[in-house]
Image 1 (cartoon, rainbow, N blue to C red):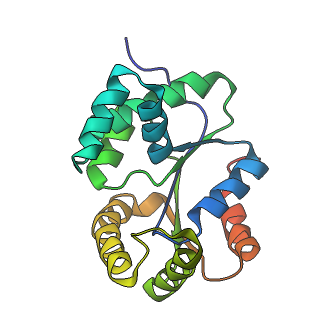
Image 2 (tube, one colour):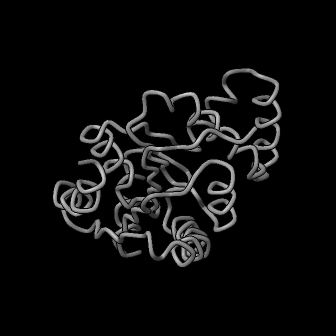
Amino acid sequence: MGAPKIQVPIIWVLGGPGSGKGTQCDKMVAKYGLVHLSSGDLLRNEVSSGSKRGKELSEIMERGELVPRQVVLDLLKEAIFTNLANARGFLIDGYPREKEQGELFEQQIGAVTIVIYVDASDETLVKRLLGRAATSGRADDNEETIKKRLHTFHTHNDAVLNAYASKTRRIDSEPAPDVVFKQIEAHLDPIFQ
């Protein structure tokens, strides 16, 4: 038995740490009534559920290892098919992080409709993250760690953007959030009319 066919738009939202991706996802959910799925949230929810899979994931993460890509995909797949009956579309936040994840997603779940890349210069991202660090107290928000995170992000993200170049729309996230959202609306309004 094959997977159910997904008839609603699937939107991947990518962007570096500090790009404003979360803010824009909130705006897209509010305007278009999309189901917002974040692989990080799904993993955290599974771990806190105390399920057998959650316990295994917890052990993997405690060892500092990467969660197997199929497990992340299974969590996304379950969340999508659970919400499919009432969904106007799906907003997949911060996924795929590497080209292979994108390919597996399309093979096992469905084709992506559009990739929104919330883009800002590294200088802006560092400035925003250092500003956040002043209030968050996060240990990984220091300049050296931030630059390493950005390097890792670009290394994998560039391969994803190249693989999905025809579906990718770059959004300049340097201006104010409402100005950024106007750019996104220009791409999503035609899809949801």
